[in-house]
Picture 1 (cartoon, one colour):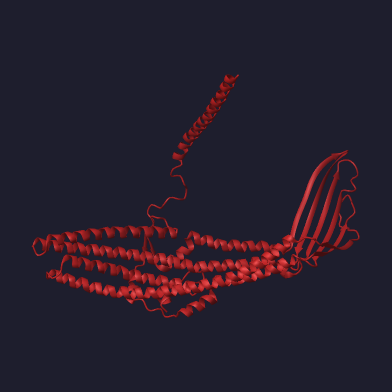
Picture 2 (tube, helix red, strand yellow):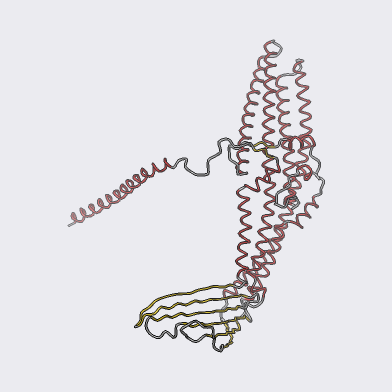
Length: 521
């Protein structure tokens, strides 16, 4: 008996193991078959995505700063989504407003039945509904019944019924401020969305300008590194000639060659960085990646020639403008008012429900043909009331509204403090950017004189190759540093204007792009 139980247990285990393995093998076979079937479809579908191929030879786009701003506002994907958010918010408001307009609806039914005699019946119902601003509801119903007998009495085939109902809340749900709270909130939400979009438009213009300037800086760095490579190449050739004539040791020629190779590597890296930045800018502007783009280099040239003036405004001027005009701060203040209204609505929900009802109805006689001879109307009036003994949900909603009111008040002050801190930090960064510009300007002047003097001393045998290479390295770093300082100052100033809500935009919400005049006034 024990042997039989043991054998049976082994048989069960072996059967279970084989079953699990067979399931897995079966699944593998089916999946492999599906993959083989779909592999052909994958190969056939390659290169068949419509509308996503690039043009073979697109025209070159010459983009000034203003052109880039306009193109970005027209084509940038995120910008279009933000614009659609404003439209959708206004579209949502139309539904709220529709609730307070006259609403008409026509309904009906038609059917056939046989119950001793055959007949078909049809009903047409026209309803006119109006929700008044103070909470009253007016409903007008006009119903027509059509009854056609195949057998039986045909004199009672048509009847019209007219009903007029009025419901007027007297306690809870009464009053324009309470009843129209949802509409009021929807109206204000559109304003909030428009403010948010206008703030986004200003920051978006700064974002476009930042990418444009950084791309100009990358192009300028590329040119500087190229000029540095050519200078070191010529210097290496002269040093090799001096080394061959015995005037310099061969070691210095090797030093010049090594710096030349490093300069060439820096030039290649600058080219790659510029092309990568250009690709990112094309994507940002929704342009094809093979679209040739040429930027206006005169902007950086003019900025370097004219110089960067000292900021002409004090910090308090920016701070006062931000606290007076920041749209997000205005929205935070309005959110506090919204919370106050929500408290009133929640308090109203704690009241008892009492409404006055008035109805008026009339109908026509049942006849063989449609008629509008209505009977003497019947009138009625009454009261509807509800006095719940437990209002836990209403109580909790009221307490939550009070807590939310306190939160909105704290959020308002927090938003104010954050804005003040942002403006102060931006102003400090602007001051730092200006000082950096002055330092880089002086550094470049010193580096230029150092290269010239060291080159003359090297030719006279009073300096080494290392002195010239170090002087040239300091010169190229100072030259790149000055361009970076100028660009950084302009970007920082635009960011400060945006944070202070002082960035001037046109009617389309795009920054006017008058760089030098607008940012240095």
